[in-house]
Every structure is written in C-alpha cells, then in structure tokens.
Length: 578
Image (tube, rainbow, N blue to C red; front, side, top):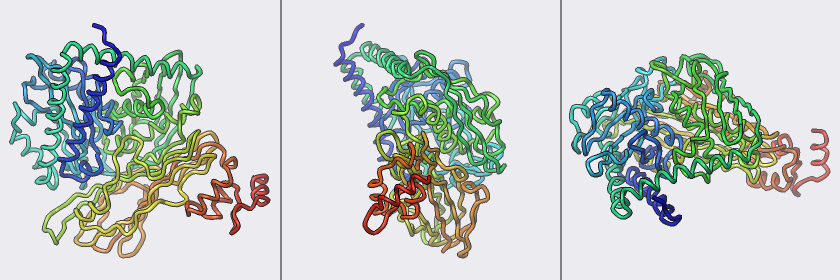
C-alpha cells in the first residue's frame, strides 16, 4: 500500500497529538508538583513487535525517548519467555527496575497493550517521576548509596491494573515501602488515565483511516526518519572525533569519573565508543545501558532537531556496549544519579566531540545538571509528613548564532522548576531568593547563559536535606575556544554556620531545623568561540544589565567599561596584552 504525502503527514501529526494529549492529561491530573507543575514525565506509542518507538509527546522528557523503547521491548520479551504474566485487555504493567530498560527507581513506568480485533496493535507507555520510592533518604536521591536496595523499592514488570481494576495487594506492597504513601494514589490514577486517553485517541485515528493504512504510515515514518538522519550524517566529514566529560565524584569516593568518547563517522553512520571510560563506581553515579543509549539519542536530537521522533532516527547511530565501565551498570550497582546527572555528562561528551564535525549545529556545554534537591520531614502545623523535590535550571551553551539561554531546563528534558508559590504553599519553606546567577555564563564570542541562584529557608519542624547534583568540580565545557561556565555551588546554613558538602554537590541526610537555609547556585553554560572576539557593545550591554561586573568584563572579555561606555583604547590594550 502506498500513501500520499498529505495522508502521511496527517497521520504523523495525529500520532504526535495523541502523545501530547497523554502528556497533558497526566500533568493536569497528577497530585505531585514534580509531575503536575514541573512536567517530569513522558508518554509514547511503541511497536507491539519489538517495542520500537512510534511517537512520543513533544512535551515529554527526551531522555525517556530511548528508555521507554527498551523498557517496552523488555516487557514483550519477558511475556514471550514466561517471566511475565501474559496481558489481557485492560491490563497495565508497572515497572521501575533500572536494569530492565530503565533509569533510576523514582522514574516509574506504566505500559498498556492496546487491543484491536483480538490482538495487540501497539503498546502505550508513560513514565512519571514519583517524589519518593522509599530507600534510605526522602526523595530517593541517595548521594552515598552503595547498592540499589538503599535507593528504594524495585519493581519488575507486574500488573498493577488487571482487566481495568487496580490490584489492591500490589498497591498495598507499594504503599508499605514508600513515604507519604497516601498521596501516591493521585499520581497513579493520573498515570493510568493518560494511557486511556491515548487509547481513545488512537482508536479514533484507526477508525478514521483504517488499521492497515496506519500500519503502513508508521513503517513509512520510521523509514523516512532513518533516511533523514543518514542524510545529516553523510554531510559531515568522515573521521574520528574524540572528547571527554567528567562527573565530579560518585558520592562515595571523592574522585572524578571520566566519560571518554570516540565517535567514528563513516558514510551514513556514526559509531559511538565509550570503552575508555571509568570503571563501575561504588556510589550511585552508575548508568544503566538503556539510559546510556538514550543519552546519545537525545544529544543527537539536540544537534538535528528536525529529524522526527521515531525508532528510525536511531538506526544510523551505532553505539558499542560500554562493557566494564560505569556506563553499563548491572545489579546491584546503585544508579540514582544516572538519568538526572550522568546522562547529561554523556550528552556533553557527544556535544564536545560533534562540535568538531558540525560547528554550526552544536552548542557549547549546557549546565547539564537537574539540580536534584530533596527535603523530607514533618510539618507540625499540618500534622503530616512531606517529601519536597526541587529541580532547577541552568545556563545553556553559546552557539554559532547567539548567546546561550539563561535558566533553561536540563539537557535531558523539558521539565521546569515548580513555581515558587506552589512550593511554598505545599511545603513549610520560604524562598528567600530566586534569581539569575550573575557572572555564571562562560565567556566566548557568544557567551553561555546564566544559571539560577536560589535560597530556601525551612520555616517549621525538622527535615533532612539530600543533594545529587553535578558540575561542582568542573564547569560546563566551552567550545571552539570558549571558556567553561561557572561550577555548581551548594551551601547549607545550620545555626547560621555555612556547610559545603565534601563532594561539593552531593550529600545526603543533612539535618535541618526551623531557620536553617539552603543556598544553591546552578552552573552557567559554556562559551562558544574566542571571548576576545565578542563585540564590545554586547559586553557593555551585559554589564548594564548586571550580568557581569566591570571587573569581569575586563578579565573575561578584555573589554574596559567606564561610566561613559566602552573605553576603546583601554579595550584595545587589554585585548592586545591578552
């Protein structure tokens, strides 16, 4: 069967819209601010044969593009070989096991088969970040875990919903192992409802165009995505491009971890090799294979955003399994930092290598940290426990066309920081500061964007604070002569005395009481190109806006600014001497 271009485009848009509506339904119905406000979730449509990605919501986290594909494939395989109960209409599986195509334990995946004429037409799947999944610390981000059991409850694929009815025994097991369990039912119902919205919309598409037409369109869209990615790759010069990126530490051993990447471009394919990266680590900064693969996929999506989201787009990307490194974690290695932090270092390594081959398409490194801050305690005025999870943005890297975006979302997704007003309403905290982190953007012809500076005070009760962040030791890399962005900074004030975590941006179980404060400065993006070639008038504008001081303008960009504006002669001397 052949399809005309208009019908193909309409079906493509309809599948995309289906996923977008799933995302919207999930966020609107969810209870937790991390899903309802921050949109830390994603929905997609997957092949009934091999779990391959068919479509994903445009507002879903890119890191879940590849992860849910692997997770769905694993569920299909486990059903096939008898490790999983076979599906019936109305069933929904729940799974968060990192080693079965996942990320960290807090990312809980639902998967539902869509039945059509007595057989499975496709799978719908979504992932939501639950604010707590048990484990040794509130929020699940254990900075010093040495085994996955310390990070929380691990679920293999099991049927949470059977023939449309939630299994009370499995639900009871979940609630018995997580904090603030009474609040999870809202997120569970929202996650399931999103899948049912997707099924209804999918049925409308199938009823309108017919099953065979939609099947043909899906195959053609996959073929075209692969073709488009190959066209982009073929335009790059053949060669080998190498880079390195660094994780501050694993949270246990205070030494950096190295991501060493070699990309070989030959014809229409790119081959990614991480074999020289650090060995598996003791702490929670290991990455499971699905997250490592997805990190490469999302980095390439940043570089070539016009390629449609489909399994076909990944076919020309050949990724060697990084066996024996911390990028291929096996049980029982802890992994709480893999999706939120290590994935972004992997993407940074891809950017640093690919900017050599495609300088017009690749940015300098972005902030590359989700800024995971969890606060758990009891609110005496409300008589209940809580787990607050704060994510934060940072600066994007400069690029060939313009400066980097300030306080943008993390590399791995579109999740945004929950509004301050919502957080203060839901938890016993006060935001004393929430502003751009001036001076944090890396210098360059096009400077990096600025990070975020925020300060939170605990108003009442007692709580425990935990951090799993990164870029506290090394700032985001500049590109093509640009300077690195500012590093991540965490300071905890207890009884007015400052405390800096020994691992800079990783620590857990810091006790707080009313009046104690947490101050965080997120990284700025890396600069792009030689900073001495930046237009002096642009530096003057940045100084006038308070982004840089006059001293920073002189030191970082070789531009002298006085009350009258740019001092041309002094600027010429500064740049000549540099």
